[in-house]
Amino acid sequence: MSEVTNLFEPAIDYPDFDIKERLDSLVGLDDHKEQLSKILGLLINPNGIQSWAKKYYPNLEKVVNNLLRRPPLIVLEGDVGSGKTELATTIGDLVARQEGITVTLLPLSLSTRGQGHVGEMTRLISTAFDEVINKSRKLKSSAGKNRGGIILLVDEADALAQSRESNQMHHEDKAGVNAFIRGIDRLGNGKLPGAVILCTNRLNSLDPAIRRRAAEILKFDRPNKEQRYFVLNPLLKELEFKQTDINKIVSGTGKTEHRNYGYTYSDLTQRLLPSIVLSAYPDNRIDTEKAIEIARKMQPTPPFQDIEISN
Ligand SMILES: Nc1ncnc2c1ncn2[C@@H]1O[C@H](COP(=O)(O)OP(=O)(O)OP(=O)(O)O)[C@@H](O)[C@H]1O
Ligand SMILES: [Mg+2]
Image 1 (cartoon, rainbow, N blue to C red):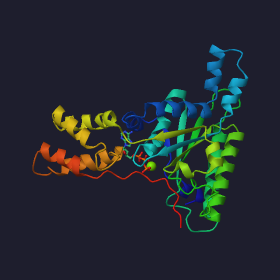
Image 2 (image 1 turned 60 degrees about the vertical axis):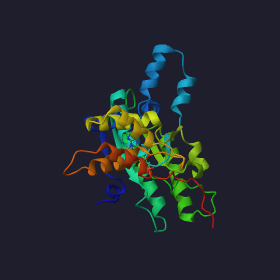
Image 3 (image 1 turned 90 degrees about the horizontal axis):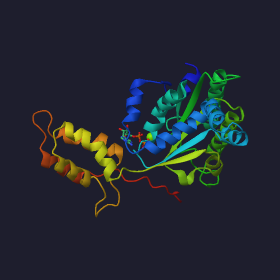
Image 4 (image 1 turned 60 degrees about the horizontal axis):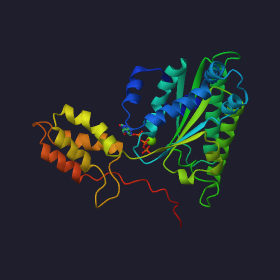
């Protein structure tokens, strides 16, 4: 396999109906969805804002140019299991439908790669940007609507999220950050139909030069009571839980006097629900009291501590 094939996880093309269903099932992220899809739309299809201007403000020039000069980077930051990766991998569907063009996501995962070898991280990032720039250059139209758009997803970007100012940062990682900044600038200066989404748990340690280049930083949190209800209600209803029992489970998954944080979205869907079902499987129906007890006793994932570890 060529280096480029190895660099990315399988690409995703949008629109795609299954992906749309996943995007639609995300709870509590409507504002993020809207904002993210608009920014990506602007970057991938500048024609859209030009048509808007022509319709509503025919003399607009500086404002449009200003908007089109936005850096092609959006940062998704926040707690574990809060929907960053899920939103980043599904938002392309909304952008594609909204703009009426095909969008492709190239996911680059830094967590399992580029570790150990000198020069590896820098080479990885530079090659990823080369690929995104080449692909999006081919999709750019000289006049009118672009033929498509590319989104580069840099997930679990904690190595990049370390400030170059930090003393503990390895020389090699600093070079990686520099390569990333160069890549963003190249993509932006070329006015190409490409954009980068970066996901991190550690905004506080994100390099200032990367932060400055973010057109938007979207924060992700744990679900509040209402949002937990929206996740759990349809699932527990299917299991024929009574409304009062559903409410008890929703309350049991929030903050308690012993801990100042509740369940994450993924705690609800990937741990709590399976545990409830498995408590009855394979021979019984679910015992509601037992299910409420499970929700009360299970320990939610502790919040990500965004602190610098000192020696
Ligand atoms: N807002 C949400 N609504 C419904 N389900 C959600 C939501 N957020 C997360 N989930 C569920 O949790 C799973 C994990 O979410 P995701 O991988 O996007 O978390 P993340 O924010 O990227 O976490 P990490 O920082 O650990 O990578 C999703 O596949 C989905 O099942
Ligand atoms: Mg993630």
